[in-house]
Length: 384
Ligand code: PLP
Image (cartoon, rainbow, N blue to C red):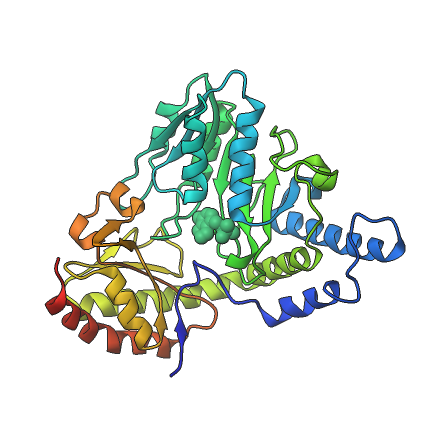
């Protein structure tokens, strides 16, 4: 059976050109970039070229503002805890939203146990934060604001430039988790006054195990990992040369192809949304119809469990993600849908289709053919 992958927000396959760029640094150019001999210089040059390339793509002032980490989760943790450590003595307020990825929510909750004051701002029914909420929440004790650029579950895009400008006005450091935006939307750090930004290579057809942290030159944060001089003493540990080279190559390719690919994905995703809503009366579209990532389609089916839909589609060769996690008899709904005030019964039937480079019109036609009978059958079996 043909497998159809529709879970590109979870991870993406490595592009062949990216693998080709990485290959020499696993074998013939394997040296530690921190060593002193000539072959290490080759590895060091490759890392620095990757850093320059990423800085240019993001329109950063300097490649010195780019730090390599192990993943998006680590980049987020460095910023949130690193800024908190910088303010450890005086503590302070840290502001985020209630729809962030756990890689932001959990560091915020953790810091709450050590005397910081975490604030989780509400969003509207589309999953969008009103920038006025930031204005209202900021006070003289605020040490950090962190708002994700685009949501991983529903794909909603935040008014990030406006939020960044408000933080600049109040001189509060601003971080954005842009893990779902890298390779999908244009990031211009000259236009966008963010102080910190997180990316993850495996979300844009690069390798797993490589994250990027952008930190504006004047932005202050303490390192989390000590043990060497790497990354200008902000993140110790031997650099992952092949991964870093692959990350830069993947960002270069996806940025170049972004406009055309977004048009194609928008067409496919609209076809999927309209097709499902026409064929399945209990289907509900979640999120914002226009202010969303072109690849992300979030649909709930009232009265059917999302996990059952995922498993049934998997048996037919289609791989998606469900928005609910089944723990014993208890179906827990996503914190994102909860924050959007979605109908809790419908939220138990949440599914996420995230499309990507290798999806075609035929894939959408196939889903539109197999999904209605799956939902019809599950409806009769459901306990909801
Ligand atoms: N932030 C967002 C919005 C994400 O979607 C993810 C991964 O799904 C992460 C952070 C974590 O990234 P990583 O898998 O690189 O740790």
